[in-house]
Image (cartoon, rainbow, N blue to C red):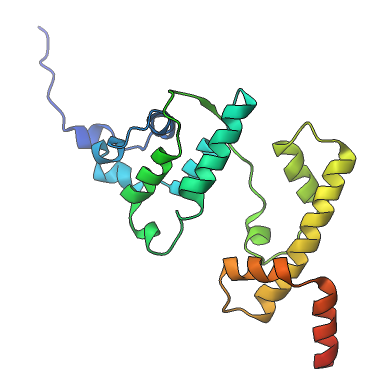
Amino acid sequence: MARAKIPTDEKFEKQDFNLFEAITAIDKKDYGYYDRLTPEQQRKFIPFMMINWISVVKGKQELAQYYLQSVDYHANKYLFNENVSKHPKLQWLMLCSASPGIGKQFHAWIPQIKQGVAKLKDKAVPKDIKDYYKKIYPQLSASELTEIAKLFCEQHKRKMYFAEKYPNLKFDEVELLSGIITDSEIEEYEKELGN
């Protein structure tokens, strides 16, 4: 005798947020996808992870460049704004707007710099930075990677100085100061203070 299948509630069947299904929905500009998720799945939606996945496309250089620039323009600049971050559906819509809407693409994960370095808590180590950029740009020569790591570490040292000196500054304010004030100006300032 065959047993009748007991109907189950969908909200208990599908609890996990399917990252790759979501990436495909973004590729297709499926603005309604977020609304079709269960509340449990919506809580598991992590915009930061989505940016890292969708911004890199394997394939034609023009398409890869489009995705990178479009994700930065439509989502990355605003996604973590204190007001926008309170609205995950808005974040979803921003991510969808970054896609050209031409169908499923092959996306790759962007490796991250260590969290302590990214948050200006730990000193950037040239070897680690070189290894990081080598993963992102494998076509670069060793001398180019060394130069990039050197420049990154110099800028990072300046940013750490401002973050330490002025702890109430926001990250973008630290970035701005680091871009307009030189190391020699910092040295002169410290001399005037007697340090």
